[in-house]
Length: 240
Length: 119
Image (cartoon, rainbow over all chains, first blue to last red; front, top):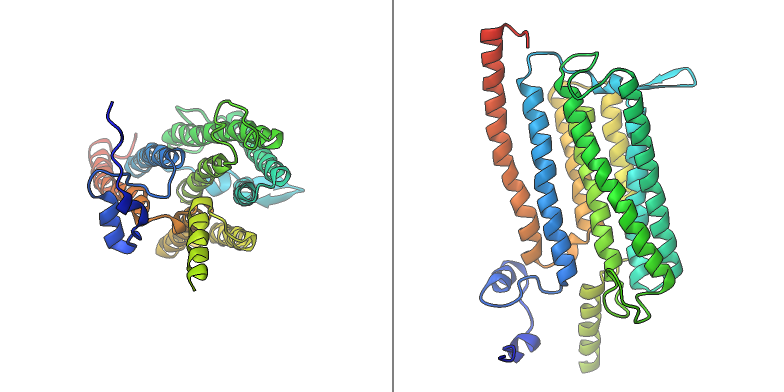
């Protein structure tokens, strides 16, 4: 077993910034992602892979929609609701968007309080985020139920192109699954924060080292990504 | 002076490791995301069509995505090595988009030509 090679100069020399820093960070045998823990780097790389998955779904939807000669249903009307006798186009999607954005806001604040080691506020804000997430999934369940009742199926719908149903269930379903996993992840980490697992030496799933609240930020990265994907789905599926 | 320098260095180290930013910044971004979403909703509400609709929707979408990634996901404070590793690969998807737009137009053309728009 050889001892790991250390380069004391690298520890003391100031790191370059800008493009020179980019080249230096990527050059030769060293850690590329300085200042970034493995947990955070791996979450980013996972999110990059997830970006490609969602990118391919949206691309498949775009290709299906652009290549069909049958008229595409008007999403503005499909997702309209009658509230108190008033016809409101796309209202359900608008509310879902605001709920998800709010959950991103509370999550960002939870990360902040996590690094301030304010356990109660961090856990409370994470629970609020999870609540917003669960509300979103609940509204999506309502949306699906309504559309299924109206006759939308993966192989057809009453208003036109059959591909509408298959791409709708695929894309929103996959996004909703991500939100659901996010809620579970948030609840697990919020419980650990509340109990003080990151202060005590308690070992466990995702517990990491004492005094480190970075897992809150990593959870946050996943959660903000879910919101980010919704931004694209909102633009391409509901507004197109 | 030396003291001030060490203090600044310590502060920088804490800053990079802990991603501490004022709550006010998050609230500001939160508000901006609300406004941008409301604006893109209004594009549909007023029934804007054509290039105007598309440019507005895409601008609001990119602004929202940028705010989320830069501030909420702290990308603005990361080193370029990470920023480029994460941001550049998805941009290459645009090549795929261009390919599929061309392909979709061709498929639509053949469908209209040979099936008369039936299926």
